Image (cartoon, rainbow over all chains, first blue to last red; front, side, top):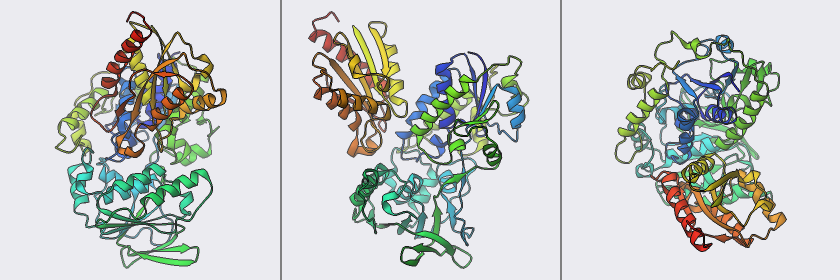
Length: 410
Length: 155
């Protein structure tokens, strides 16, 4: 089967989709387009720096380019460098797999005070995304609002002693920032009761390995549901762990009502089962989900979609991963999703040989191809200092410099 | 030798390794490969040697694609007394408490139904520095040699 397919976003969903498409139809031309000069999206910038095993899926994605014939067009922003309409005219099928990178806001008074930071903003800075803002001063007493895996990632990284980051790819600047953070307490709050917290039990159990913490779980309650019991068992297993310097407190059943403070976040006011509670803090870290970043009109596309469940937005236009489903689901769920979408796409594919495909990118400067990414990858791996597996190039300019000129891909 | 590679996967890493093992040994043997979710316990064939490749997921659980197979084994209770298998596990020591529990459970399931395990269960650690194939290729060669000797065939 022939045909030209462009996937916007070279993160895990886009790469799994390319893998599944090319497995079923090896003669397709599949092009992955990313606004960053580097591929793999959240595997590089979302999966925590100390979870290198989880990042191992990147080896599969490398095969998609190296053996299955997919091509990478990095540093190309759809909506800026090429319009979505131009892309759709050039390819038989366009799939939007651009993820959701903007932090969902609390939506309560004071949520825009200085000292309130989204998890995406913080993790981008920690993991050296080229568009990250600076790492802010969190003060001695940050409060994390949110009970998903992202919240636990943040908690764990903030709580780690420097030597517990050995083997990670956390950069020099972020490592120093963590070491000098001066954090004394971290309170993590969830709206639901503990039993219905969204984090995975295994993520909670991992906290029992932290060396410099004291963990207290307050008001976990009980349940007789099997899944809920797993969560509660994990929480019970870490309750009372450690005698270290950083005090970690888990709280549940707290719904944020306002962030309070004079010119800066100094407390969060919560509604609780028994009334209200004010927790003083030096910063508020929100990890309550993500939404679309500006660039692609996701809300309009989804609201006008023919069949969102199947990933069909319009004729020849599909959505995958978080961009389709919202910010839920881990790497394997996106893989299963991508396999299902590949079948949907191939069932309806009719190739039009007059489509120009990647010629639509002709004339754009500084496109990074897969070989360019390999040069970046090699430079980063070679530059890894003692105790780290990689030193990321942290700016677009240095990436483009190392990637060098693109070899012709036509 | 007739060999079937069966893999249980969640992220696709075990599938990739299974395919790599297939490429590595297919010149010398008659190889079939199947995802465990597409394999029924009734298909086990005593003429065939089974190489299992399996990951761990979640809290020491079997990966998603091995789950239907495990359910079918429980339901059908096949007699695997004539079946020989070897097993290679993929895991992540970051989660040391449940490291390689998926393949361990799969091996126990096979043995509980009478199957004979050849060689030790070898485990790759995603947080370690080895490539999975660098451990898996020598493992495959060793267990194939061992089963050849055991079954009195020419290697």
